[in-house]
Image (cartoon, rainbow, N blue to C red; front, side, top):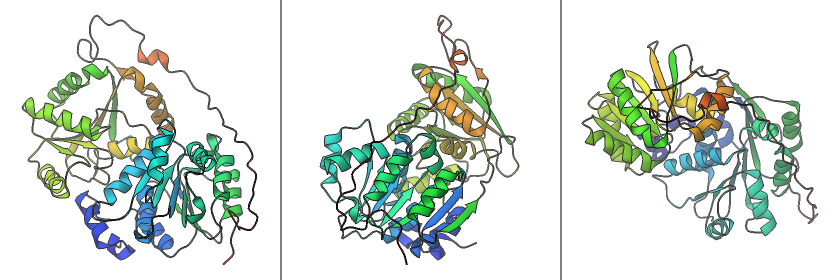
Length: 415
């Protein structure tokens, strides 16, 4: 199996990959990276947990021109959480590169602030369809400079009713762009989209290596944000793990929890994007050598982390998507060993717990540690009573006038 350098990834990026624990490309990365570097349109059918994000991020970074301030790559995602996740992964990969800027564009942020950032040099935009169309309407960005277009989680776009908006966005790009589509399934509507906008695409299908639920015991504990730290310490004192990874949502939360564990006398290290590369490498080495028992990490910093002997994974903060959940619990129960994954859930986390259950087709039994995870006196509606199914509402987009006929925009190109 080739390494990242042999696939065409430059040594600076490969150095960053190695510092994060990425040594061997996943099958989707091995098959997709060379095709994208060759300029081919690509349709990749891949489940969550296959490493597909880096499959398109790495070749995009190889093809970006840092001297050109225009938007050269556009990555469309169905949710703001995924947009945030991808942009953070790109930021990590840019550690040893200069002159490349990435901007996440999604709803819930201040539009004026985004517009101000878009006025500067921005080569990569990661966006959700609705907010991107808002910027197009405001003329705060120009997609005619886009050379590489990625449509990620295309089947989720379909389920959420975003395909008409995706169609509008593609129209704003020139037909000379390179198009990459990633999807776990291939409904007829997605196939129609590929036929309409892609030229002789290479079809790549990779089945996910099952992060086997059978090998990992999964436990969900009901708690509150105030009691998370106390609950975690109670659990690790009870479980006495050999090695454990504790996942936090943000760098600040990871840093604060690490400091609390150190203050409590635990052998802990931290792993997140605020650390220098040398500090991350030292933290990983200490953990691999079992000189520290606990590694408090964020998702992006721990991508690809493969350490033997991890007996427990603690989701201090619940992940917001199935991919991240599978990635996290996959750090334990490796090489035929047993593993335990514990997720702490506050009432506000129920929506994300539902997403995970749907993705892995499993319903969790929510446990309570009375007097620890919730107070004895607390008498509120149990989380398990709130698990009502939600219907997905589709968003309809208004048809946009297709002016400027002098440009060949958004249509299938010929080679």
